[in-house]
Length: 255
Picture (cartoon, rainbow, N blue to C red):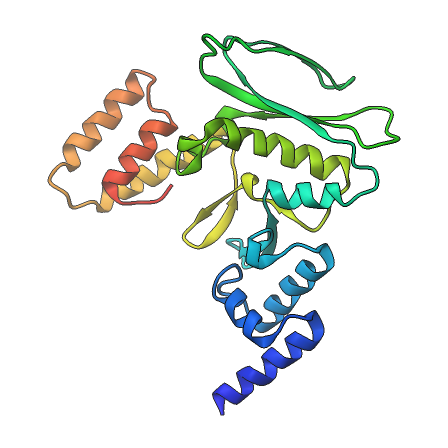
């Protein structure tokens, strides 16, 4: 009886969204985990109306820590939507490093950028410029490395690409008025739910709080050594997010 009820529900969702019951089952177990039938139907309706393909991971969803369902797209999803517009007119973007000769005027949308390819230094951020046809001024967006760098996975292996994707997503979303889709780069996934990406100062304070709580319950023999290291780093002004993430790994907590 239970299987029959699930099949009936899948059939209803299928009629509403156009996805086959077999496809719905795959989506629910991949890009729409932990969704109710109503939430799944909503997500699939958004996917259908946006023209983005959940099987290509152009669109997916998560719940936030209040149980709200949020629908996400990556840079490629936003780019696909923008390129479908008859106003599409290209995009310019680049990462910016310490030693680059760079200047940007947000109001006029004008940027000058001469990279020092011999010795670029550390990444500071990235910009993206989008000017749809018929628009008097371009949309220009800046993404700060300190704010958006998540310090893991592709942020480590492909840092230039990742920070550019943040700036490009924000510029495309604003320039083409793309609504109903959240940028994946503005959120972190923690414990299966998404939380907004905080400013570095706020995130560091949250990390310190979680580390203090983690130390209280930590049973490892190196507990006192870790505590002393944290105090030493704090006194030296070197207790940053990179150090906080290293300590979190030792404590086996997520920040």
